Length: 283
Image 1 (cartoon, rainbow, N blue to C red):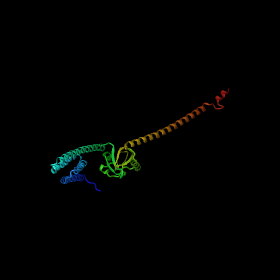
Image 2: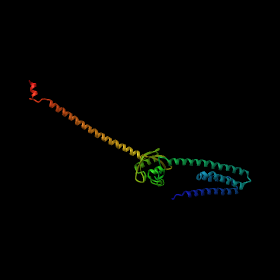
Image 3: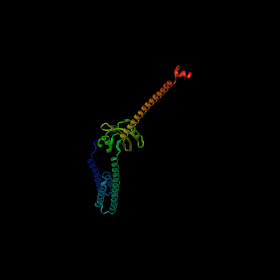
Image 4: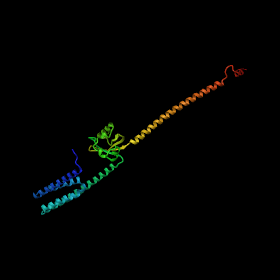
C-alpha cells in the first residue's frame, strides 16, 4: 500500500476532526429540538481528543471554539431553562479543562520526544533502528549512515543483511533479542556501500513494538591498531628468538674454540718422548 504524503495526511486529520465536530453539532440540534438533554454533551469530547492527538499545539484554541459552539447552541435552543444553562456552563468548563490539560501534556511529550531524537541524531555513536519481524532498517542517524557511506534515506527500508555482513553474528544477536535477553551486545562486521568492512560493537538500547533501537561503536580503527600491535609483537618475538638462537650458536662456537685452544696449548706444552728436555729430565 502506498504511504500517504504528509500534506494529504494533514488534510485527512482535518477531515476527521471536522466530521466529528459536525456530527456533534447536528446531534445537539436534534436532541435539543426533541427534548433529549443527557447524551449529546459527551459527543464534544471526541473532536477535542482528536485535535489533541493530531494537532496538540492548537488543541487549546480548538477546544475553546468547540466549547463556545456547544454553549452557544444551548443558549440558542434552550435559553429559557436556567437548569440547562447551568449544566451547559459546567460542560463548557469541562471541555476547556480537557483541552488545556491534554494539550499541555501532549506538547510536553512531543518536546521530550524531539529532544531525545535530537540527541540520538547528533550522537557520536552510530544509531539505527530495525523491525524485528521484517529485519528492515527503519532509520539511522547521520553518524551511522556516514560510516556506511549511505544517505540516511537510502538506509530506510534496506534489509539488515545488506549492511550486516556476518550472518552468524546477526542471527545470534536477533535470537538474543527475541529470547528476552536484556541489552544484548555483540561484535558485528558491517559492509559499507563501497565494500569496506567495518567492525562495530552493537548493543540493543530499546526494544518496543517489534522495533529495536541499537547503538553502534566503530571499532575498525582500534581493531586495526590492535592487530598491528599484535603483528609487531609477533615479529619482535620472532626476531628475538632468531637473535637468541644466533647468540647461542656463537656461544657454542666460542666454547668449542676455547676448548680447542686449550687442547692445542696443552699439546704444545707437553714434551714429546725422546726430546732433549725429556733426556735432561731423566739425567
